[in-house]
Image 1 (tube, rainbow over the protein chains, first blue to last red):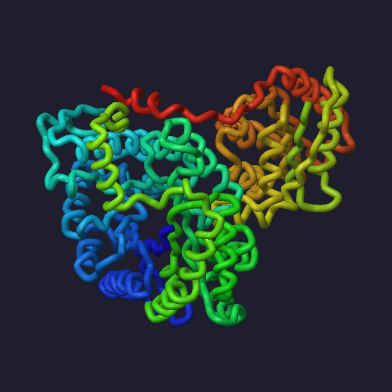
Image 2: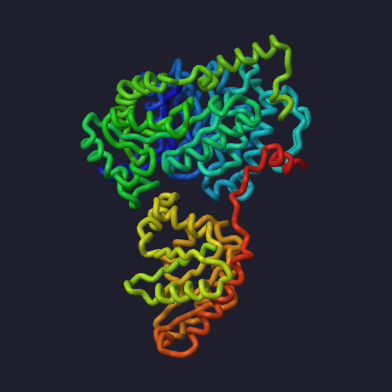
Length: 372
Length: 192
């Protein structure tokens, strides 16, 4: 099982000091957080993609390429890559380039984005969000899997004799997750292709997350990729820790009360009861995270949101020390217990290359080629 | 048959609730089949409605109320008139309801106010709102000003509106959960 962090990349004033970091400070802080994730033994760093203030990460592969050069093991990912407003041709090229630079330590998560004006800024219509996600991703898959593509669709200029360069590393496309909170169509899309499904549950009640994951698992089996238990599931999480849980609550409360997403709404206590947010000791975080398995089944990837609501970098780095040193080692051990042998790990570059070679040795056509 | 009554009165006792109960009783009297009545007091959900607006998801009591409204065969909605329209809390309850929850559902609209001068609020505020939500709004809306409680005519309007809602309820389409569209169909629909 993989553990990591995902960041939205928001520039938010620290409510305890009133100070707002500059864009440069925030971008450098995101890099420092990624390097810390590797240092404390986490597996994955994922960055958001946004094209409006107060967010800075508009160019994820630039940032991930820089982090790739300064890390050895960390898998670099996104949370999410906008499959609706980005040109799938540019996504194919950018992430294949990143694969080569990062020696395959790359996957990505598709998302639609939720800010209305971003669509027209990129010449698109939010009402066509699902259709854009469906068509653009179908093209993206072909660009990574076929050397020469002839294509015509509803949303993009046709392609005749187009080759996306560089070709994916070792002829293997990066593994793809599909992130969605509310749309069954996206769970269906992930299931159809046998891709991963990430439910960003951090602002949502558990019952909702359970229904979306059940749908994905059942449809994954329906499309013949394996049993429902073998589907590739990722979940979000959101925590703030101090050794003493009262200290955690006291320190985090002003950040919670003023956070852009949930501030000035329900109390910290109400929100932690209804959603996965956990504020307390490392032991409480361990117990809460282990409980996700009760409604999501055995899953493959757990990403935590750690740098939000205006928390200063120093605090975030302390949080990552606690996460990497005290929480994740216990989670690895506990999640491994009673995990059925047939539940796979999340695919990575090495396993995808091995699967491709095994396929070639068997000399059979892949299901993917017949269904695209 | 399931009748759900959404009452947005704020005081206790409330004339809005009084009107709601009388309308519900009229529907029960006029219906051919047995009617199970559930009343939702929006006041009790005020904080959860506000949290839903900021959080994007309902708390437990609000989620139960939304399920009841979605599953109803008929709906009676009653609001006090505030500043020449429905109350903000009444509107917010419907703002956080799934946009398809009322599609095809028979709805009886009603309002209360201190003066008869606001009676057209039914037709310039409530009827467009429920038309937008694709509900089937019965022709008779019932407005009760303070003076109506001592005058002739209110009881007849209540009875007529109750009859109209009762006659539509058995024919109402029950909303079914939309199934997943198989992915191949989604993809094929985009082929040029």
